Picture (cartoon, rainbow, N blue to C red):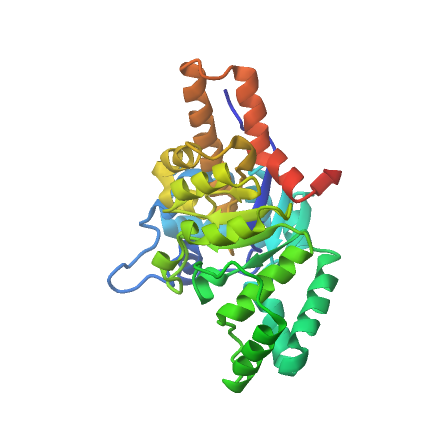
Length: 370
């Protein structure tokens, strides 16, 4: 079977840079590395780099495997907006669910990103970004109420929330809701430490999480693979088990993002907790030729109704195209293997493909009136 015509909902992504990029700037956005350096002179020499040359180059009227400098010259000739239109049109994405909390400028807004292909744009609000704005302007005794009010206002237009607790304190969070006294004391300590704009207090982050859960929107959590700021050993989703038990009866979807290299553990959590949804965003375009295996490993245990498509693309339109292409190939390979083994019929495989590609996200985020 072929899933090329199945629509995609990118349930976790970011905006793109709309200005011209030189080679160093392009390479800095190509992988999770900060930039190429003297010991690793080119980030085109990665799975993602070869993917751009193989998959994206023909969409810009270049031969497959065009040299990096030729690719970037053609990119500059077409202009950033035309490149974005061509590459995003190839993805088949109908909805972008965009985390606006990471470097909101100068990348495109959800509406601008969706506008390239007349898709739909939806916002995910990052909890720590809101809290840091409130903390900078509010005295500690008023912090909790001010945050609740601000988040409720954002919930009027956002389809969900996200926490980057993994980056700030790790995922081994206490499962209980912090008391008002605990929150007030933590807010005072944060202010007393000079009110750094970076919130990294375990009590306050638990407060953010429970405040978001009270609003009933899906809650995204960064899990696993990320840039050099993350301590990967503190990002295993199994650390979330107590919190997932505590939230199991709320009816609020909890979205475990990325998950690599812990994607098998994430698949287990999705099986044993009905409210857990999982993806392998960010991973597929970085593992490239191994995308089939990574997606298949996630699908070993995860119920098909709990798996979502997402790219976690940021900055480069190429990453949306590359991830969508690799995802479609990997999902086709997985479903074709089941068909060949007579484990499911073609019609059922087609239904599962639509669920994973779009239907589960429509349902979890209540898009399209779901």
